[in-house]
Length: 100
Image 1 (cartoon, rainbow, N blue to C red):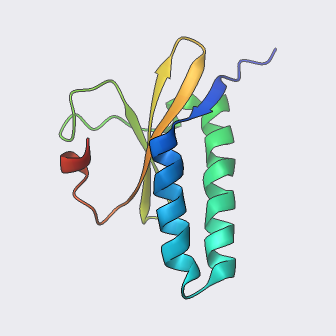
Image 2: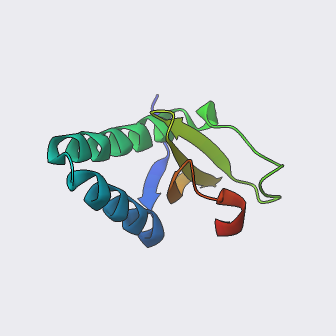
Image 3: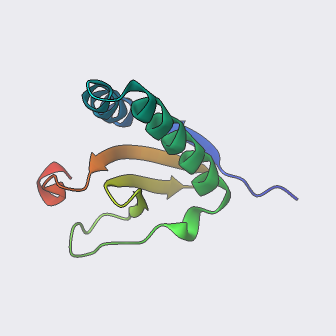
């Protein structure tokens, strides 16, 4: 039985990944490409195992979860009914509270 959630990547998350990819590609296009592939692979994994992420009530009261990629990036997502929504992809050094 497949309990995989539908996956929806919001435009803002796509914009985040584009900016991250462009920034890294200035120095290393291969690393940028590999990171973007890892993001999409992680999205698929989260759609199968949505509870892998963690809640951060110190960041936000919203019912969202975070998942860390390569220690430097946070994926922000929420689950609604049978869909996993990728909301944002943040570099960990940003003021995440201000962006929520």
